[in-house]
Amino acid sequence: MKSTTSTTNGKSTRNSKNTEGPEGVEGSTPGFTRRALLGTAGAGLVVGAGAGAAAAVVLDRPDRSPSGGSADAAAAGAARGLGPARLPFHGERQSGILDPQQARVQLAAFDLAGGVGRDGLRTLLQRWSRTAARMAVGEPADEFENQIALDAGPCSLTVTFGFGAGLFDKAGLADRRPAGLEPLPAFPADALDPARGDGDLFVQIGADDALVAVHALRVLQRQAAGTAALRWQASGFARTPGATPNPMTGRNLMGQVDGTNNPKPSEDGFAAKVFCAAGGEQPAWLAGGSFLVFRRIRMLLDNWEALPVDRQERVIGRRKSDGAPLGAPDGAGESAPVDLGAQGADGALAIPSDAHIRVAAPAANGGAAMLRRGFSYHDGLLPDGSPDAGLLFLAFQADPRKGFTPVQRKLSRGDGLSRFLRHEASGVYAVPPGAPQGGYVGQTLLD
Image (tube, rainbow, N blue to C red; front, side, top):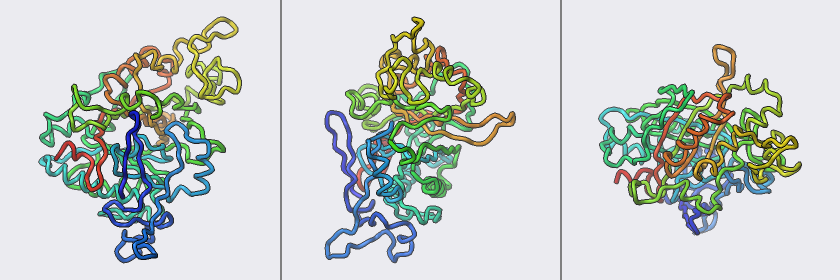
């Protein structure tokens, strides 16, 4: 599947309107599912009805930005269906970063086996990239197709790979480890479980169908057997496209609109905040890539839900009903500018001094910003009966030392929301640039 990427004024766009599959063969029609592909001789090769005519028309996913999207996205999604929607695997950037957030996510980290080395790592990444490209257009997996998602289309599947610090020593690449891939400092009240964080290889799999995401992870896990073993796995969810009458930023398990002020690709300086540029401390192989910080954050929902709504709003700094910042007029909506100097009728700050949006504001953190892509999780109850639920926090940035670390340091000291959160797992990963057509993710590092 050919995928072209253009860059204008620092903004990257991916073009998925094409007719070729991941290995240069003609792709399937939008209605063609894994069932049809597996039941056809020469699965994956679909021929046009007329001589020289391509049978495929790639069905683009409804245009939704990471924080909500276009006004007609819900209607477009309902009219065109979520199943056939596809996002290109190949391109300047890896998929799953700038693409609209899907309804489901599977996160996993793997540790390399002893003695795998650089060649073994290259073979695995070639296999994984080839498979991810096939699944992204709804074709059967390259190896170990398990038919879990047999009846589904690609459902906007994306697979994103990242490299943990330990990978570089194990693969004999210590001299190529980026300086930004240093461990995060310890933050007050952290309660991290090492078994549920870190790892040599990180995988983020997003899709609008849970079975499609589970299928992809299971295939990749089987393909890694003998080369890399699963270290940890987490499942998350977000709002399904079309679930609301009008597109809007999703809510987290605290019921708050979450992600309103996420930086947008259209903003000046966006690329410099999110993607790495060659030069300085950044190695050449990471140019166009990013860093990902992962945190598993449990929400103390029993304590939170015991607060009256007005107290919850003061902790966050936004109205719960519509996401508007406190102090904004009625009907202003979540996109209303945040006025940190606004005062209430009593003369006190409308947004309290320890409100989350005040402490986390880029203006209060030297301009530090991250592209957040979080998903909720709910894994039942803990032994004390409280919910094991919260946020799978994912944030892409050009350098964690200038993005996540200073912001989290400030939040841990002065954010009123921190009383209702427990950080229980953590990881930092270098996310290489995307793979060109015929190439694989990590090629800039390994070749």
